[in-house]
Length: 480
Figure 1 (cartoon, rainbow, N blue to C red):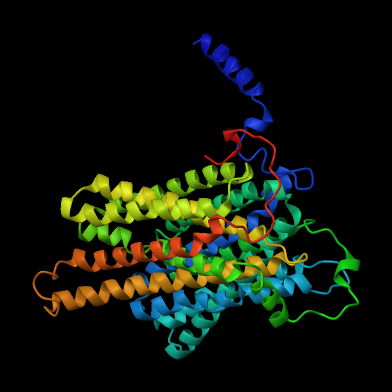
Figure 2: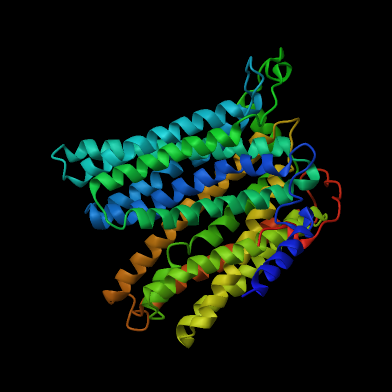
C-alpha cells in the first residue's frame, strides 16, 4: 500500500507536464475570443439542447402514456415549434440591422429569445395538465395553452440560436470558425443527452407536481445559462448601431443574398441533404425492434452510436476545414457516406444482421455530422457587408424546416404503407412491415443523390473568397 501514494504522485506530475494545447478545444479560441469566453458563449446551445430533449423526448412520452393525450395531438404539438423555423432568415437580418443606443446588435435578440423560451416553459406544465382532462378545466383551454407554450418555446429557440450563432461568427477569427462550429455542435449534443438522462431520472416517480417542478426548473436553468452565455460577450459599439443611412429592408437584403453566385443552390443542397439525413430520425429504433427483433435496451444504444459517430465527424471536419479543405467538398463526402449507410440498413433486414445495421447507423451519423458542420461553416463564411446574421438565418431556416418536414413525412409514409400492407392493398409480397421502412430509406438515398447534384458545382467554386489558411494544430484540440 505504501507504493500507492508514489504512483499517484507520478501520475499527477505526468499530467502537469501535459501542455494546455493538448487539451480538448484548447485551440478553438483565439486572441479575440479566448477559450473560456467561447465555452461560456456556447452555453446557449446547451439550453437549446435541453429544451429540445424535453419537448421531443420526455414530454412526448409523458403526454401519451402518463397524461393520456392522443398521439396525433402530441405529434401536432411537438411539430408546432417548427412554425417559426422559416423566420430565422428574418431574425438574422433584423439582428444585422438592429439599431440600439447601447451599441448591441445580437444581445437584444438573444435576451428576448430567452424570455420567450422561459415564458413558454413556465406555462407549459399547467397547460399539459389541463390538456389531459384531469384538472376539471375545459380541455379546449388546455389545447390552446399547450399550443401557445410550444409555440413560445419554438420561437425562443429559433431566435436565440440564430442570434447566438451570428454573435459567434462576429467574435470568432476566420481561421478558427470551423473549430467554433464543432464546439457549438458538441455543446448542443451535451445539452441533449445530459438533460435527457436528467429528465428520465427526475420523472421516474411521475406525479403532476413533479412534472411542474421539472419543466419550470428547466425554464429557470434556461434563463441562467443564457444570461451567463451572453454576459459581456458582444462589444458595445453605438456608432455601428446608430447609423444615419436608411435601413435596408428584408426584401432588399434577401435579394442581395440571392444574387451571390450559387447562393440558392447552396440552400437547396442544405435542404435536400438535411431531409435525407433526418427522415429516418424516428424510424431507426422501431426498425431495429420490429424488423430485427432487438430489445429496447439494444435499440436505445443506437442514439449513443449516432452521437459518437457525429462527434467523430465534428472532430475530423473541424481539422480538415481549418487546414483549408473546401467546406462544400467535405459536405459532399458526408453525403457520399450516407449512401452506403442507408444501404447497409436496408440489407440488414433480409440478412437479419444487427452488426450490419449498426454499421449503417454509424455511417449515417458520421456522414450527417460532416454535412452539418461543413454547411454551417460555409454559411458562417458568407458575410454580406457585415450582415452574417442573414446568411446564418437562411441556413437555419432551411435546415430546421427541411428536418421537421422530413421527419413528419418519414413517419407518415411508414404508417401509411404499413397500414396498406396489413390490409392486403399492396399484395402478399409487400405485406412485410420491413418494406414500409425500406421505402423511406430508398427515398433518403434518392435525396442524397439529388443533394450531390446540387452541391457538385459548389465543391469546385466557393460562394465567397476562400478563407486564409489557419495555423497548424494537433488532433487533441478536438472533441473526443
